[in-house]
Amino acid sequence: MSSKTPDLQKDGITDTIKRISLFAYLSPEELSHLGKIIVEKRFSKNEVILMEQDTPNYMYVIYSGKVKVTQISVDGKEHILALHKKGDFFGEMAMLDKKTSPATVVAMEDSHVGLLSKADFDRFFLKDPRFLNQIISLLCSRLREAWLMLKVLSFADAEDKVRAVINLISANNGISDSRGTVINIRLTHSDIAAYASVSRETVTRLMDKFITNGEIELTENTYILLKPLFFEKMHVL
Image 1: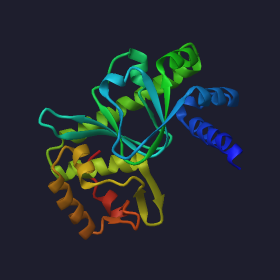
Image 2 (image 1 turned 90 degrees about the vertical axis):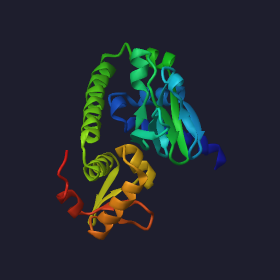
Image 3 (image 1 turned 30 degrees about the vertical axis):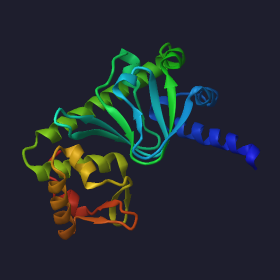
């Protein structure tokens, strides 16, 4: 059984890669080759995956786990820019313009990540017109996400900010069932505060309010369940 484990792991990695929209056009042979040239690394919870100065060197694919992209303000406060889960990728923009990104990526839980080097990225993708069409679509999507976050941060009311952030997270990490939408990332009040640019105490007060109002629930796995009433009360975005 042990002799088959590496092949099974590679099959799982190839399966993850082929589900990524950026690589959807690749043939099975190309996907297999891509899986072989990507370097695998494992990171423990709270371990730094990527520092700003490293951003032009690699593109990252998440095979398992969850990570957050953060900035630290001049006063030392963390601001979350994005959350990524299995099947997501990041670092592609730095591959294209060779510039650093002013952010740090940290594992929110134990994570298995693939690293594609700049040299392999250029050799494998940049001469392929199929990839260039995909990357244009991706960059448009990233731009829309950035616009939404700017809109969130422009809200004067803290409750509007927190509601909008939870809604955005659910759009990317939500699973619908008969009860509502479950956000399948374990988020602390500090995480939500760092995303919405409000205090942790404010998030705690608002989350208690949402629970009391019957808008959200915490599941047995400490995931956030958004009930239909939560979405009915959305006045933003």
